[in-house]
Image (tube, rainbow, N blue to C red; front, top):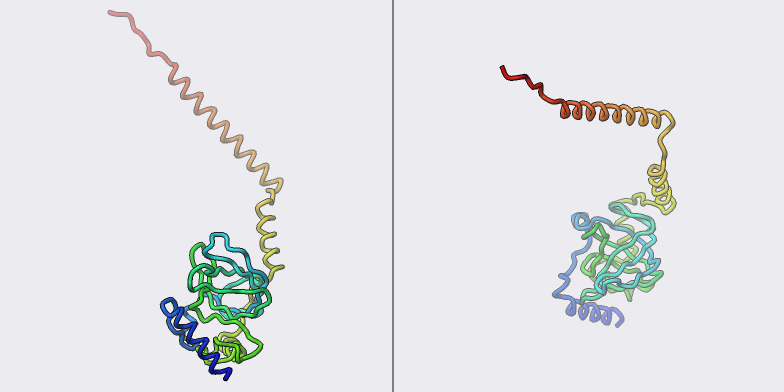
Length: 210
C-alpha cells in the first residue's frame, strides 16, 4: 500500500512539473558529463532569498565526487518558480550542480540531486533513480572515487597568504635600487627640460644690411 501511495505521489509531482522537468534517466557514467560538481553534503544553513528568485543553501561537504568545491560550499537554487526546491538544516543530499552566471554553483529541481530519507518508502527519488540513496552513494564512490575538497582551514591559510603577499614590503636593497632609479630619472628629465628651454630661448643672429 505504501509503495502504491508513493508511486501516486511521484506521478502527481511529475504531472505538476512535467513542463519544467523531463523524466530523468538513471544516473550513469555518460550523464556525469552533464554536471560540473557532484558531492555528498549536509545542509548547514539556508539564506533568505535576496532577490525573491534565487536563494543560497550552505553545505558541509562529506564526500566530493567530481569538480572543485570548498568544504563549506554555497549553492544557489530557485526558490520562486514552479520548479523551486526546498532545503532544511541537517538534511543530507547528493548534489549534482553546475556553474552558472557569476561562477555561482547552482542546483535545479530537474537535476539528479536527491535528499536522504531514513525510510526508503518515503524516498520518491528512487523511482527514477532505480537505486536507493546509499546504493547511489556507493555507485558514485566506486565509479568517480572521492576527491579532495578545499577545507576551511586551508581556505583561510590561502586567503591569509594572499593578504601577506599584498602587504609584503620590499627589502632594503630593493628600496635603494628603486630610489637610485628614481633619482637618475629625475636628473635625466631635468637636463632634457633645460636643454629644450635653452634651445627655445636662443635668438637668431641679426646681420647689418650691406
